[in-house]
Image (cartoon, rainbow, N blue to C red):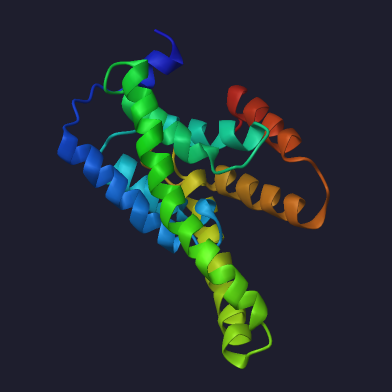
Length: 198
């Protein structure tokens, strides 16, 4: 059996489940202050841990493929919806899942950004605007750190994987301090995972 087949789940979602998925992504959209990536820990909690609609492998694959592909990295949200649909049995449901998750993550944040961007720019010198921006910085950093921790520990194994966490921290340092392209780090991670080192 291929790895992909091994990670497919057998789901039978009803309309109420799809509405719940859409509403959850609407809520996450308003929380995605540092971008959609900052909401990855809650997506993992909801899709993998709570609802069991995605496997850890599907969750990680969605993020890795979107990061390696050209275009906006929010495409990982589309891949998550696609995988949920595939777990329901067909590519058509996968396309529907993509529509559900992408409309949920894009509608609120795009509307809010459209309505507030001009006001924020026109009032960028106000103390309250500058304070808000400064106060959001540590929150965004915390959300991104928690995203890295969740991703490094989503491997279907109950134990804490120290080498994997150290590798994730090293990759974050390399991305922060150098201009190394993300694809090289993804390739390195794939080789280390394939060889069983991490």
